[in-house]
Every structure is written in C-alpha cells, then in structure tokens.
Length: 632
Ligand SMILES: Nc1ncnc2c1ncn2[C@@H]1O[C@H](COP(=O)(O)OP(=O)(O)OP(=O)(O)O)[C@@H](O)[C@H]1O
Ligand SMILES: [Mg+2]
Image 1: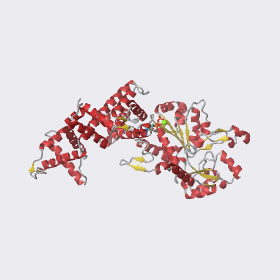
Image 2: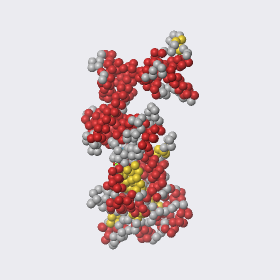
Image 3: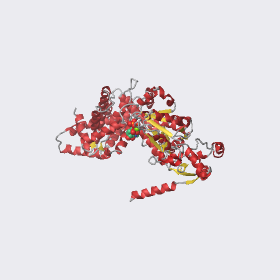
Image 4: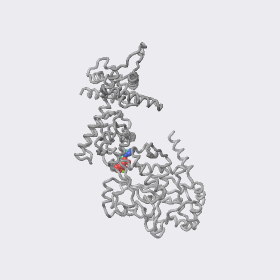
C-alpha cells in the first residue's frame, strides 16, 4: 500500500500547487512575485543556478545541477552556462540563437538535454520556477502578452518588467469574442511542464523528409472545423500543436538537427531572428523558448561547408561537448550505466571498470608533443593524480596543445556493450578486468568506425592497460597476504623513521624489550632504501630529506604519516612485498597445496572478499592469475 499512499500524496501536493484566477488577480500575484514573469531562458538559467554552484581552488565552477548525472564534463558545462545560459537569461541576443551541442557519439548530449527537460518539469513545480499562462491556450501563452503595445511602457513604469512578444491570433480572437476586449477578465492558470502532456517541453526528431510535414513543428489546419468557422484563416480552425507551439515557455529539443530537411531549418530563421514563427495563414506567432539541437562533428563540418547554409550559421551557437577525459569520471559513467541496465546484479570485480576506463580514455587522448611526456602520464595527470616531475599546471599546458581533444575515440556505450557480451559469454554472474579487456579486444573487429591502423593502436592500448592491471593485481594479492596490511606498513615505517632519526642525530635507540641502548639498525634501513634504488652514497641525503620533511610537517601542525612521502611509501611497500614474494609465489601457484598453504589461501580469499570487495569467484580468479604472473 505504501506506493499507493505516495501516489495519493503526490496528487494532493500537485492539487495544492494549482492556481487559477483572472488576469487582474495575476497582476496582483506578479507584484508579490515578480520572478514569475521571467523568460524561458532566464528560468532555465535560474534552475541551474538554484541547484547550487561550487567553486574549486582554481576558480572553476561546478554546477550541482549536473553533478551525479554527467561526469567529467565540468569544463564544457561551465562554458555552456557562461557563454549561453547566463547571457541568454539576461535577454542578450544569444537567446534567440539555436544552441547546437556538437560532440562525438554517446558523449552525453542527449543526456544533457534530458537533464534540462526533467529539471524543468520539477522546477516548474517549485515556487521559484512557477509559470503562469493564459488558461486553455494550446501554446500556454504568457498572460502579459494581453497588455497592448501602447501601454507597455506604462506597464514597465509600474512593474519594472519588459514585455516581449505579441498576443497570438487565437487569444486575440478569444479576447474580442469571449471577453469583449476586457483584458482583466481573461483567465490565467499556473502550468506545470511535462513532456508527456506536451506542456512547455517539445522534441522534434527528423524522419523521412518526404513524409515529414512542417505541421510537426508549427501545427496544422484542422479541416474538420473549417466548415464550422468558415475559413482557413480563423485561428480556431487551426491546431497549434506543433513542437514549437507546445514547447512555448520552455524548451524544444531539435534532435539531429543537421540531418533534417532544409525546409525545417529555414523555418527556424525567423524564430532565431525575431523570436517568432509563422504558422498557417496567421500573423507571426511569438515564441519564448530555448531551442537546443545536437549533432556530431562531421555533420557540422559539412553543414558549414555548404554556402547555402550561411544565413543559418550566424543564428547558431555551437557548444562542443567532448568526451570525458578523466579515468575516474569515466568509471562513474560505467557504474551509472550498469546500474541502469539488467547487468546491475552481476558482480564486477574491483578495478575492472577502472581498467576499461583507462583504455577508453587512452583512445581519446592525443599523443603529447612534449618529449618528456607519454600518454599514460598524461592520462594520470588529467585525472588529477600525482606524476613525478609534473604538476597540475602541466596538465593545463597539455590541454592547450590540442583544442579538439576528446572529440574522437571509444564511446561509453561501446564499452558497456562489450561488458554485457563478456557477461553473456562467461555464463557466470561475475566478471573481472581480464574478461573485459578480452571482450574489448574482440569487439574491435566489429566496431564500424575502426580502421586497421586504429585497430593496431587500440590493441597497443589494451596491452598497456593490461600491464597496469598486472601491477594492480599483484599488489592487491600481496596486500591480502598480510594480516593487516596498513598496520604492518605503518609499523615498518615508524621503525624506519626511529632509526633514521637516531642516525641523523647521532643518537642511540632504546631496545623496547631490554631497555638497552642500541645503534641504529643500518641493515633494516638499507633493506628499505634499496627497494627504490638509493645507493650507499645517496642514503645520507635521503634520510636527511625525510627528517626535514617531518619537521616541516610538524611546524604546520600536520602529522607525517604513511602517505606523506611517495617514495618512502613505495619503498616500504616494496620491502613488505619482497619479504612476501616467495610465499605468495609458492602459495598461489601450487597445484597441490599442503594443509598450511590451503589455510593461507583460504585466509587470503576471505580477506579479498571481506576487505577488498571481491566475491569468491573473482577472488579465486585473481589468485590464480597472480600466481601465473609471479611464475613468468
Ligand atoms: N560524460 C558523461 N556523463 C555521464 N554519462 C555519460 C557521459 N557520456 C556518456 N554518458 C552515457 O552514455 C550514454 C550515451 O549518452 P547520450 O545518449 O547522452 O549521448 P549522445 O551524445 O546523445 O549520443 P548520440 O550522438 O549517439 O546521440 C548514456 O547512457 C549516458 O548516460
Ligand atoms: Mg543523442
């Protein structure tokens, strides 16, 4: 019954939001809440802004409206808001232009438009996003259009609101015939956007140009009523039910705009120029709506190459929506897509999506021009990782090398399809990184846009990320062999630091058991330092550097810990693993484990499951794989 209660409650709430009154009453309301007269563009911008804006340390803005839905597109979205939504909301000229999102396949263009649509449906149900319209008007016309032109200056003096657009032919007629011109009596109602009910949101999708009619955009004559009204130019004999009509006050999505027939595009000319469009035999109809179209780069290039389209060029604002270039964001895209698919309950072993994401991002990156950089380092830098010898400033430099980076490469849908086919082929509801890499590889032959050269390149990326995976897999298993890995690493580091301190200060240590004074343990220190290639001659400098780092931390009141020094952490880790190597190697690769080994294997598997997120299938697969790696 729970869901039925909720449905009833939602209905009640919707009922509460309803408002109906005369135009005179609407004006009273407008005095109280002047924002209800905002333009469609302003409403969309405010919707985005009201969801919250965060600014990061580099002054980059993050619009929460998109967070959790679109990943890794922060820069493109920031630009979109700042160069289109914001100026359009201020009634600058850009609002009359068509917003054309240009980007590679499956790069999130439709998702972006859908977010805006769903956002508007919700926003118009809030106080700040409320919209009012002339009651029963098929185009939900703005009530302020009722104010005749010659009185609009007076209206501005009183309300401070500028009115744009003329009363539509249909409402003009109703005003005369039903209300004898008494504007104040015209009924007004609050409306709620809904794509399903065709209120404030429209979608136009090109189909066969021969059969597709302009009526889909601008409505059509209702022949059955001509007899009643006597003429085709009687607005009551016209159905204002095209997408442009229905989307009035809100947003119209023009899917695959450049694929559509020219006649549809020309229709948009006057709309983008004057904010009105022609329907049937009527005077121009004012439209207050944002038009968002999308296309891919190839289509766009051929469109601008065609001289005939020149007039339209200047009425379009092109915003690139490139692929995401950050591995960790790409991983989130897959997680989201899997959650929405039937594969939601399949076990996906740790690191699987990350490895797939690495491959995908590599296919999108351009080879850096700088000699000291390679693709893997670039990938890490872009993802905000620390790369020895480089800083985030280098990442910004690298981005400037190619303006069109992210406009090609492998798309997320391909990856999801390959993951699905890996699941099907394997037959057990548990897949790992190797299954996915294999599937990505097999799929390259079927991918329509992959040339033999590109295939070669992509195969190379697959072996690159395979190597990354090998490292991750080995580390994971080695960690799982230690009873409490973090704890052991910390203890070993504390021990090392105590010795380094005594060595540098020429003091002695105290034996914790006997309380005796002892010399620093040179053998222990060297065994750790050697892991990262520190020579006998360099050891003093290294130890001093560490002490300096510790005191710098102390001055700032920060605690120097296991993660404070990258190279030291690496050394500690390697030392722990070196001690383990033989036991891991023997235990994981033996075909006939003895009782002791069996106990260890079970212990490690249990740890992989409890602490590292594996299931028993993927944990066993991992152990077997690492066993084979260590015996190579
Ligand atoms: N940056 C991203 N953030 C979140 N999801 C994304 C992103 N890029 C792609 N996706 C996901 O990939 C799928 C395809 O995206 P979408 O349909 O929005 O792309 P598109 O650009 O419209 O593609 P097409 O050109 O094929 O129409 C969707 O499930 C979407 O959620
Ligand atoms: Mg799309």
